[in-house]
Amino acid sequence: MLQLYIGNKNYSSWSMRPWVLLRQAGIPFEEVLVPFGQSTAEGSPFRRALAPVTPVGQVPVLVHDGLAVWDTLAIAEYVAETFAQHGLWPADAKARARARSVCAEMHAGFRALRSHCPMNIEASLPEVGRIVWRDQAEVRADVARIVAMWTDLLQAHGGPLLFGGFTIADAYFAPVCMRLRTYGLPVPAAVQAYVERVTALPGVAAWIAGALAERTFVDFDEPYRAAR
Ligand SMILES: N[C@@H](CCC(=O)N[C@@H](CS)C(=O)NCC(=O)O)C(=O)O
Figure 1: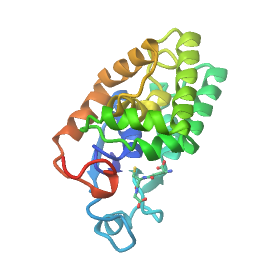
Figure 2 (figure 1 turned 90 degrees about the vertical axis):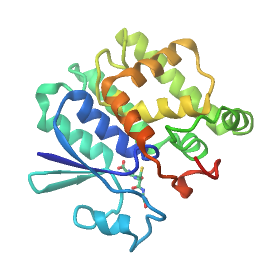
Figure 3 (figure 1 turned 135 degrees about the vertical axis):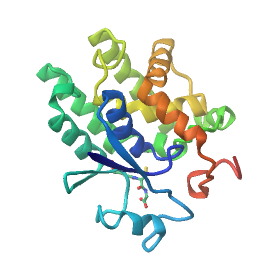
Figure 4 (figure 1 turned 30 degrees about the vertical axis):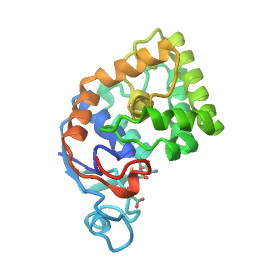
């Protein structure tokens, strides 16, 4: 049985990706939720809980048959290889290379969007989004790149998802969909429709339900609110 260590569902965008991937693919796993608490610093309960499975002190971590795999991209690759019958990367080699490119782009980039619009599924912050959009050219540039990427992929593969059917790439961008919703960032209708299709995927809807059920307010993930 797989075990997936994750952080708070409302906030942990990296945890969301492999959780959605496994759930949407119908691969059974046990969830181990390690709350962020007041701090994730060295010596915190969060770090102590993760110490047996990762030297990095971050979620997500996948544990399978005594092997711990950390970092989202490594987990996605491990799941795709171990459950090859699920076709989690696109079947076509060129599409697969492009899917890996955009996941790597997500992994290493979009820093302005990530820092100014942290994932906060339960919150609705369109007024914050308007100010961020007005003042942060780098956020506008990140969103422009996302819009261009998704528009190209939806056209190239005919939708409904980035590479046709569900792949790792959709799991990878699900937290971006959450951010676009929370902050009400302006995107073209075809991109908004993709956001809504991703939000409605059973694996994504199940994660959102978990996030909404949480009652914890994590100060260091809440630059814009004092309470829920
Ligand atoms: N590159 C890592 C990033 C993981 C990451 O930043 N995880 C955050 C939660 S979303 C975390 O564990 N933060 C706690 C900390 O860094 O102290 C991955 O893709 O797994």
